[in-house]
Length: 347
Image (cartoon, rainbow, N blue to C red; front, side, top):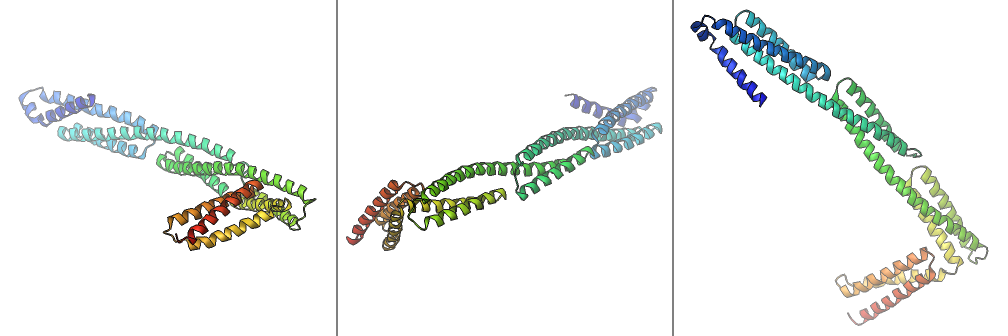
């Protein structure tokens, strides 16, 4: 409401000044009253410019400084016009100066608000950097260290821009650093979870290797010792990959270790016959699958059932559950027999 009233008053004043010649002719004191009114308006503009100077000095905004300088220049011209008794020109110039001063104030306040926003972001990202540094302790991945160093450099430069009043440039670098740090923290958290899972799997494989080494003394299989040696080699290789930050290679090597030691234990426990039976049934299923047309839904259902039972048998082998593996193989064999009868009956 105050802004509206000021606008109305300014418009009234301008209209009044435009009528100066008429008023001056109609009243002996009209010229003096008009000059007083004009002087008051010029002084109001001076006051606004002083307010703008304080705000601009605090904000260090280039846009605000540009508008302030324009306001000062226009106001100086307005006073010269007033002194030389050019009231209409003085009015126009002081109103222009006033608008420039208002723009300077607005820019300064916006810049001040922006400064607070940038400062808050820089402080938050600096905390995020410290968190990332803590998480990175013990991480050997070169790519992670590179991301961290780049983010740190961007934050340092952002602070330099902030201290020199270049808030937009500071905000741009701060956003880049924030994005990189968020990504780094998410990836590191994921890797830490994978590391925990890997450690649990490694402990299980280590226990299997110890169990296999105990069985070797009474083992009749000449291949078992070789399989255990291969398992130990793969286990050690997996550990080396972990220290190098090669998580995927470590998981693959650990899986090889598990496969080798599982085969060794099966051979020492006499499970090799079950394995050969599994391989034979798997080959038979592949041949039968070729005889079933893709459009034969009933035949395909038998294929899927037998394949699932073979998968259960394989899982039981890997978990050293011989009885469960034998039961799954028996179920697969029965399903395949049903499939053969179905095919022989001509569908």
